[in-house]
Length: 372
Image 1: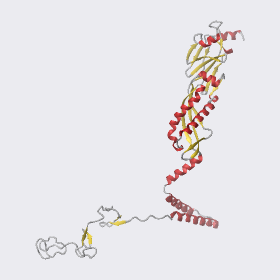
Image 2 (image 1 turned 90 degrees about the vertical axis):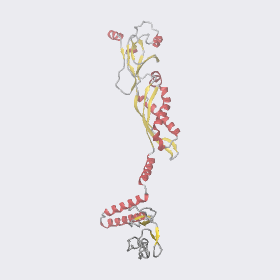
Image 3 (image 1 turned 180 degrees about the vertical axis):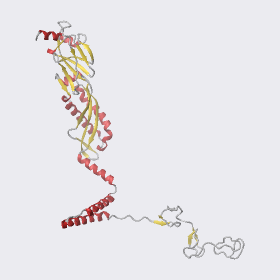
Image 4 (image 1 turned 120 degrees about the vertical axis):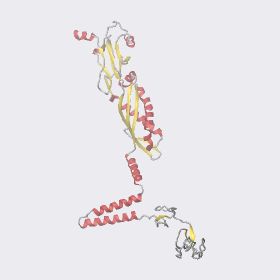
């Protein structure tokens, strides 16, 4: 090393890390000969932590802030080095910047279906997927258990391990949940909260903390979904007999529109017509419902249900008080003017003397005594 390089290395230096990459978790600061000048300036930005490693041992961990590296600020490293050359001597150490921000929108999903026992469908294979977020909670433990002394460590180095831990925890959770598969959608929030607590136990040994975990969907096998779609369609159709009649009528109409070519086409058309006719006859061969009993209104002669008390057209009572005919003594309506049996009038004649109404069959006027 030349004299100018030596002098340059003795100047007070600034140790910091700025990175625009979103997936970098750890970055090793490049130091010439791993020698750091005592009194160097260390800048740790928000969502960062600086880890000093001396001879494979974690010496000091700095949180966000600006520091001047002295024996007062580096008590552990000062004790390890036992300085012999005063405060301005360089010391050898490796500096690692750990990204402690929250890594969001991390996707997880089941590579293979989750086997579970369902009370309604029996054995089922479920698939699930969602997102999660986490952060480095303990930089020292994360360095020891995860990245070691790598100069650069990204999300790809640990995402596979984290996803498998999540899938394993959710598989256990679904197996213990004991809820019908069709009802799982209403428990997504509860399942997500329980899964977050359970997965945290698997993240903690790496110095990580899971901040959130969400289950976006739990899906049934494709063949089961098809059966459910058919069941839903049957519920929408409603009356199967009516629907079959409608389909038969539509098929006959389409067959009538199809103009066959030549004798072969005519034969095909006749065969199809015969088959459709049989299908239509079978669909139409439904037992007809017996006609509802009706009655005739005595006032407006309108049709009304047999058990109706009032006419739906004129509103009058369907049954009237009965009276006896003055001639044949058979029952008739109380307001009938003539007997429907013998034709005798039911109203008396007027008195020729006083004009009063008299009873039917009376021979003398009850008011004036005039002979009728």
